[in-house]
Length: 139
Image 1 (cartoon, rainbow, N blue to C red):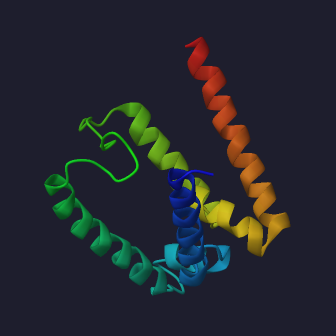
Image 2: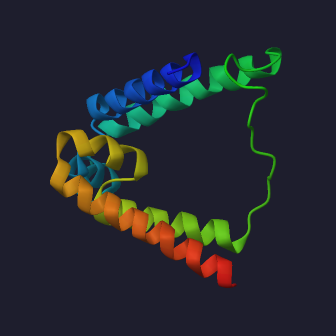
């Protein structure tokens, strides 16, 4: 494995460990966070707040860098528009997150902690991605 692969593996492991330690792989905790009108659990706000602080620092540093350590250039988003596909996808994502209590990153990380429940989620997620891929090709 080359240096880029090792960095990717370590980054993924740190990300997954952070999701697990922060409680993002616990569907009950996530649903508690989303239940703002009921028995709200604000702990995940600190996890998200920590992520936002890190990204603010990184977005301030990135323009000063010539290029990433293990790539030819930065892969930054260029589109700034909102379209129906993005809004619909975001709404569908939110509904799925609220029902399952997981989103893709924590769902994959949860495969280590609770393989059976997470596997059902990951399988459904992959099926949904495949369905979108098939329908977009025909459209």
